[in-house]
Length: 420
Ligand code: HEM
Image 1 (cartoon, rainbow, N blue to C red):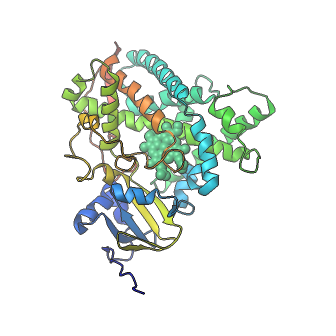
Image 2 (cartoon, rainbow, N blue to C red):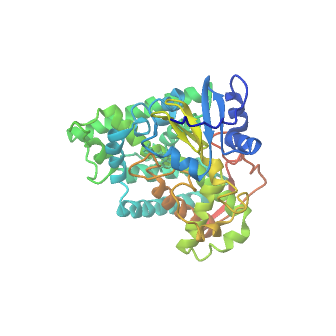
Image 3 (cartoon, helix red, strand yellow):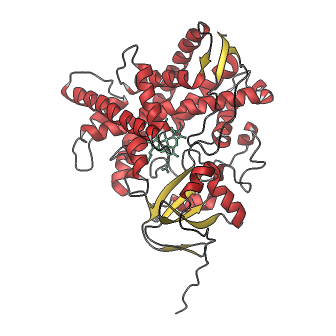
């Protein structure tokens, strides 16, 4: 029998390159794929061997459930702040599928339309409020706006005056992802306060002390039963409800990048004047492709296998480069140009445009909130481009590729806001 010859992976020499990841951020994988002239290479990260890859074929492989699993892939510090213990992100197989269906069941067409209406209402209220303010910092304001919208949509009661505090808790979790020291501790702290707040609500829904609309996230998740037919413990339900609320608040980052694009792309902005759905959609898609948000994702092979001649060993840390795939020159014409029209002819592949993960929403780990993100962003874009007038004073609009998540440094300051 002939033994198959394996190709050697291009290898970054050295003991550990975690510091380079922190230094180069979103560009760490891309920089090396260019250097090696290869979309796959081997390195060492967080004290272990790691394979990094980018591109459409790599994404197809990464999302093959027979080859990769998530358990034990995400670093503990990400679970402690961003994801939460026992959440859908770290499940595999039947258990994942069952839990994922719970998430997708609250993403019906009607629910998405309802979110769009709620978002519109909160933008209108915010725009009125901003008229009376000498200066508006969009990032913080958008977090408050989205926190109100998220809670209303999810059936989570929020007293007036509570929104900014809760928004700050979600913000701390989001900003803690790649942080160390105080920022990380703030994120952990915010997570425990939020889990307590939400798990108390779950208990109250279960005892009938408070009522949540039947189709809402709060009700659906509180009453969800696992594969054994049992209710989830209230802590896990809280983690999953936070997996809905926190990322909706995180859309504030995309709102800032959308504003940046509106400010810096006057020709593209003009095309939005009719508020035609297609233009809004393509602009939002290009914001999600162009600007950095989630850098890369981790998984581990379930078994040994060979792919394109390279050997993958069971358990080896494998990273898929999301940002690099969205900017891959073989997939995108002039990837460093902001051009919403490119989405007129996009082939719709689930593996070449992956700002929120790739593959299938139901059977894989692709972001459960991708559609709702797009709805919220379209409504926000309409406000930023058409339904408000404002001036942009001198400020630092730059953003960095090593801060994760990245954000325009000034967090977008607007003055003389007027609702149109
Ligand atoms: C703010 C913009 C967002 C970005 C950039 C984003 C990005 C991502 C990414 C990269 C993943 C991982 C995909 C994978 O592991 O393969 C993910 C998963 C997830 N996202 Fe989002 N997301 C966003 C908004 C949302 C929203 C608004 C929601 C809910 C309303 C949401 C809920 C989830 C959930 C539940 C998962 C886990 C899915 C699973 O493991 O099966 N995300 N998201």
